[in-house]
Length: 74
Image 1 (tube, rainbow, N blue to C red):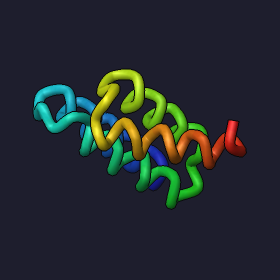
Image 2: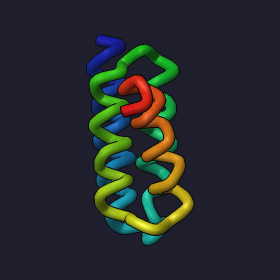
Image 3: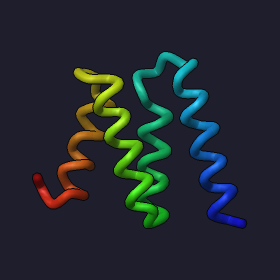
Image 4: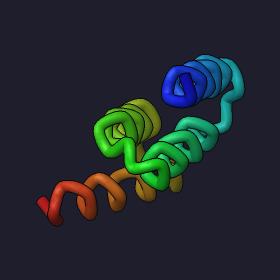
């Protein structure tokens, strides 16, 4: 149940991000939350989306740095 609620929360945040014009800030925050909750797979997916959707932004840079760290510096 808890995991389902977290997934729904993440999806809501992702949907709101598309409308907010914040350059992926909320999606990045969700990815960071997922990473802290040890949901690495979902965190990686969200970091990848931020890096792809918002290239050249500070949030994309942070997302790419986390991707590199989580993937072992690849």
